[in-house]
Each structure stands twice: as C-alpha cells, then as structure tokens.
Amino acid sequence: MDGVTMDGEQSRFTLPVDSEHKATVFPIFSVAKPHMRAFHLSWLQFFSCSVSSFAGPPLLPIIRDNLNLTATSIGNAGIAAVSGAVFARLAMGAACDLVGPRVASAWITFLTAPAVYCSSMADSAISFLLVRFFTGFSLATFVSTQFWMTSMFSPPIVGRANGLASGWGDIGGGATQVIMPLVYALIVRFGVTNFTAWRIAFFIPAILQTMTAYAVMIFGQDTPDGDFLGLQKSGKKHKDNFSKVFFHGIRNNRAWLTALCYGFCFGVVLTMNNMISQYFYDRFDLKLHNAGIIAASFGLMNIFARPGGGVLSDMLGRRLGMRGRLWGWWIFQTLGGVLCILLGRAGSLGASVALMLLLSIFIQASCGLTFGVVPFVSRRAMGVISGITGSGGNIGAVLIQVIFFKGSKFSTEVGITYMGIMVIVCTLPIALIYFPQWGGMIRGPKLNYTERDYYLSEWTEEEQQQGFHKASMKFAENSMSERSRKIDSVPSPAEMATPTHV
Picture 1 (tube, rainbow, N blue to C red):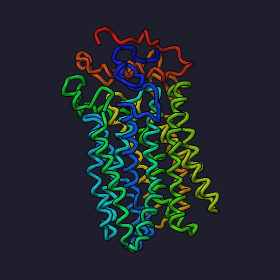
Picture 2: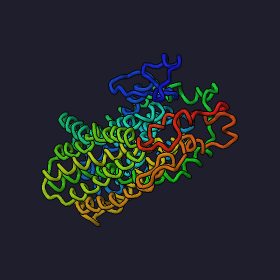
Picture 3: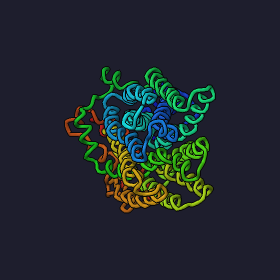
C-alpha cells in the first residue's frame, strides 16, 4: 500500500498518512491540521524573516547618502547580513533535533526582531553593519522550515514540501525589493523627509516578523503526533543525546558535500538579493522604484522556481531513484552557472533582465533540488544535516561577496561572470555524493545493502535493544521509493521487514 498506514489512527488525521503519520499527499491550499498548517506557518515565518534581512538593499541609494556609506562599507554590511546566519543555522539544526522546529524557529524570530526595529536608529556605517548582522540571524528559520517539512511529509513528496516552503519563504527576499521602496514612497508623500522616511519604513518588516513568531508558537505543532517536549515528557518520543546526534551529523561526509554545493546555488541567491537592485540602479541609470521592481522579479521567481525544483526532484526520485535526484541537481546548477556568466557579459538592459530571470529560475530550482536530497542523508541527525547544509549556503554567499563584490577590485559585471565560473566548478562535487543503498551519479548501489542497513548504522546495539531506532526503521521503509526502477538486486519490502524484537 506504498507505506500508507491503514490502522485506526488514520482517522486522527485529515490527510492520508504513512507509518510515521507523515502526510502522503500535498493539497497546497489546505490548512488541515497538523500537516498543512505547519506548511503555511513555516513559509510565512521564513518569508517575514527574508523581508527583514533584505529590507536594507532596496533603500541603499538613500541610506548610503544619509550615513555616508562607501562601496566598501556597503559590501561589508552585505557580507554581515549573511555571515551571522552561518552559526545561527548550525545552532538551529541542533535545536530542531532537541526541542523541535516550532519552539526553535519562533525563538530565533523573536530574538532577532529587535535588530529590525533598531535599523531605524542606525547612524553610521558600523551601526548599519551591526543591525544587518543580527537581523541576518533570522535566516536560520530556513533550517527549521526544512526540518519541519521533513517531519510532516512522507519521503516520496518531501522534495515538493521542502521546495514550496523554502521557495515561498524565499520570495521575501524579492518582495522586499518592492515593499520597502513603496512604503518609503508612501511615507515621503506625507511630507516626511527622505532621511527620516527610510527609518520609519523598517517598522513594517519588524512588525510582520513579530506577528509570525507569535503565530508559530500559538498555532504550530512539531510533529504529526504532537510537540517534541510533550512527547518526550510522556515517553512517546526518545529524548536523544545531543553529543551523539551532533557526532552522527558531522561525521557524515554527505552533509559536507551538500553544504559545499548548496553554497553555490543559495549563495548566489543571497548575493543577488544583496546587490542586484543597486547594480541595475547604477549601471542602467534607473529610478529607484524601477530598479526595485527588476530586482524583485529575481526573488519572485521563487513562486514556482524553487518549488519546481522540489517537484522535479520527487519526479526523478520516483522514476530514477536517488541517482535521478542527484543528476537533476547537477544539471540545473551547472546551467545556472552558465547563465551567470552570460549575465555578467550582457550589455543591454533587456538582455540583462532576461538572463537574470533565467538565472533565477535555474539557480532557485537547484536549491529545491538540493533539499530533495538532504532529508535522506540522515534520519537521526536530520536537523544537524539541514543546519550544516543551510550554513553552506551562507558561507558560499560570504565567499562570493568577499572575493568578487567587496570594494572595487572588480566591476560588478565582471564579478558576476567570475561568480558563474565558480558555480560550475563547485557544483562538480555532487558527483561524489554516494548512498550505498541507492548509488550516486557515477556508481550504482552496493550489492545487498538496504535502507535498513544505512539508517540502522546510526544506532548502537544497546540503543537498538532499547527500541530507540524504531522511527529510523519506519523512515527506512518509507524511503524505498528512492530505489531506481532498474534496481532489483536489493531485498523487497517483505524481505526487509523489521524483526519482531524491534
């Protein structure tokens, strides 16, 4: 029955579920509790944090005149906005494993909201850098979003769930390119001076971020069966040892490979969000509002681009297994690098806009394809793996901006070209990602090695005797969809049945 549970507990849920009570369907416009409610809360929260984190760049032409910012100080502030989230994302992954995505994400959203309010009080290059740095911590909600979706949706559809939640959340980075100039213009119409209007405008993203944090805490639920802390207290969920969870996460080489490669798809997204508005404003002598609309279109491609990557990953997974997911990721990200090179060499406004939109589609889809693979890297350390991979995206953004866009070493168009070359080179390690039970891009699976063998390896004999591994075995069963249709050398579901002592 494709892993769908048929016991009496099915009646507890509005949607059909598998043996872990994860939804096996994805009715996107539903608000069914707990699965679809978690989906909508997660993307709305990430959206609000993206709006806050990138609220500064669309107003930079005004802010730089007010604070006397140089090209170097603007570059440093852009780097600060994404570098803070490196550590925050690592911590968020561990926090999700220990206390659940609801509490972890709500608290980081609450704690970073004051930095957004304080943006209105920045009066120097240093203070502007600091508020962008601390606001950027909120981007760690991306990790909780991916963890939450993986906890709520079955492996065959987890790619589309992750892609839609993160994609729609990431739209905030584009939407803010329109929202902030419009709010600013509206405030100016009331007779407020330019240098005061941009400060008042920051209260809009700050209020939005605070409201979504409250919504997650009040209406959210960590897993289909309840909240982490409640389940642990009742004994229904094993309270794992942090050091063991962290150890299994950092020793998995697939985590570091996905982090490296993700650094040069999501890293490009963050870089473009930081500089694309100013690039079009300066290079083609556009009005602030028009440059903002063009820049917004880059992020707004996320309405379908990143979710499309997740859907494509699931389609490839059903037809070609994990190997198909990996090949799709490599192809799309490599083409994104090629488009980046072409954008840097384009000389006209029309060609630049067209290439920017194509780049957005391919590079955002690559992000969705990435997190069609990540949920399968580890069941026990899922949060740590997501945190490592998510941090890789921010590290990539920092490296790209330091090397190519800080100061005046390269013109922006030359920097974009070199960024594309770096994307192509740093996408090659996808070929090294190998799952012994499913194979990789180049090699096939290891003979007679099953999903059960892979996920059981994260638990010691003593832990298995205590039954701590049961959830991993259910996940292993539900992950059999990642077998290529051409593979028939591994045991069937009946042969892989969990032993009676489990």
